[in-house]
Image (tube, rainbow, N blue to C red):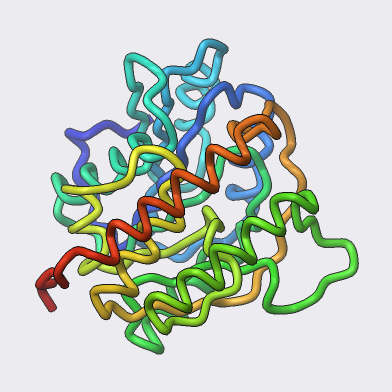
Length: 255
């Protein structure tokens, strides 16, 4: 396991939030290990106050992987927003990363999309690039439940209506943020269900947003943090947050 005192020269950081992912995390890291990641990618696992052996699994596997792995243990479960923001703050504190890529620990995301996200961001000078499961149809791809797909379409239409930016998968947790986006996220980031809110902030402030097609899979273990009883709360909270954000003045962003 590589710790903060080890300062290797790197370009991009993969942030992997993990809450009670002792079952899925080994499979996710094993898939990453099979991928020939170019030199210059680090992995940061943010253990979000897990009550299982997530921290021990991350620590035991870290030293055997072919890329630098860092581990941050949050003392209590703080939610996906705080876990991901920890990654952005890590990138800001170390000062050696250009892109920060969010990648789930539960096995839903395809590791092959990592370099594609960065390459697309580079080629199109994007501030935020999202991996969308809806751009290309794959017969065997996992696309979440019917109710969640309704919510995704609703947020896509809402964001386009209020910002003019077309997106197809605003809730995707597979995303690559450039410096103008992630430096701001290190200071201010939504606590709950942050993906649509942070995406809208980028669109409202005229940062460059894009998408690439990706394949997603069913989680490899554990339980999703968004259950059916939370769906109505989730949609109402995010909708109100986006509407309130729309009323704010545009913020200056450094180039």
